[in-house]
Image (cartoon, rainbow, N blue to C red; front, top):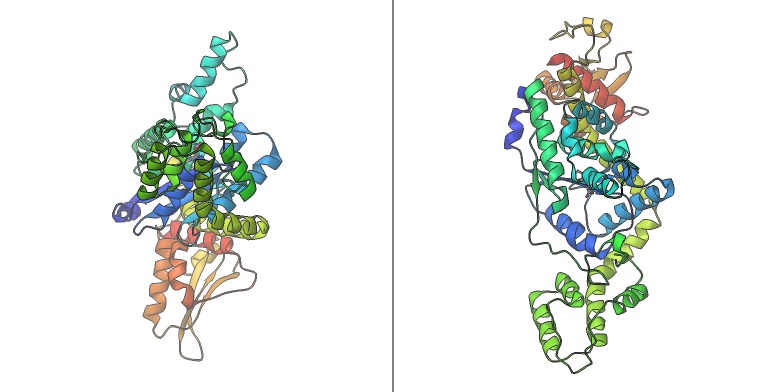
Length: 442
Ligand code: TRP
């Protein structure tokens, strides 16, 4: 079963990254993650997966309304910043039911001792120990299992590269170990992922000069209204040099934020103004205008999107559909690999006619009065799931069937023009029938 996957190594590099859905995106998230990711996703040759990590959010947040609101805001932010859901796979983690299922399979190949050493968990334990508390006080099993859930996110989609911040490198290494251990036990199923650290992405300072972070309460929300943006920028800490006095660009939070938005020439010009003693008020005005120039048009798109949650929901569901075309058959393969199997062996090539009796979906080829060659896919209960338009030759019809048998739902898009849409038949029903056909053929 695994040799079917072998050509994958020649496939383009696959990038995948998750965004935890707690909170509202700020300028630091934009510069450090949203902007570079959107830029990368428009590049050629790469296949990108972006998802809203809402299962992960539950580990940190027990306010349902906040999880929902943050999911909406983050989805709208990424779309407003130019992420094109047609070019990438953009989905919500909790729409992929295979993720928690894979989490369990990985849990069973992960050493508990390895999880004991995960940074986030260890930090909590160290804090408790220092305070003289029980080491595991206030630590949920969810926090402990965080790296395994993240491993499932990554391994499910066979990601090669995972763009993350430095604090996440250990998690990617753990995902690699899980993949290796699983492959060793059950055969080559997983791709070993690598962390991709963007060295050039600067950490944006916040209002007080420390790293911009919601937990320091020094963040500028990405899509705060224009007036509010101006006010917040006015509050950036500066030294007390008066207008006319030369100012230091290095170490100035204002200057660093400017640099993250401006071109090299613009940055050089501001540096010169600093040397020449520009007043802090004027410098703040320049910074405000520069940020607003980039963010203003996105803010408008953001506001439009925020008023249409149904549209975002539809985009996310379409993304989930795309993602599950990979996840569903892969999970079936993995279940088979570990021994979660039907008790009755599935025959390698079911004899014609017998298939219906064994409860498997079946393809039927036939010729219509117009002389053309057609096929249909009947479900286990004989219901029609797919019906083709007419092909000129029986060979063409057979080729289409063969591609569906070999590749399942992934063969559907190229055949789109050759298939009729049938009222009342869900993609889900078609996909799962094709999965069954596929596992029977293999
Ligand atoms: N843990 C990541 C963070 O906090 C979010 C995340 C969840 C993630 N699953 C992932 C990132 C998978 C990359 C790949 O930033």
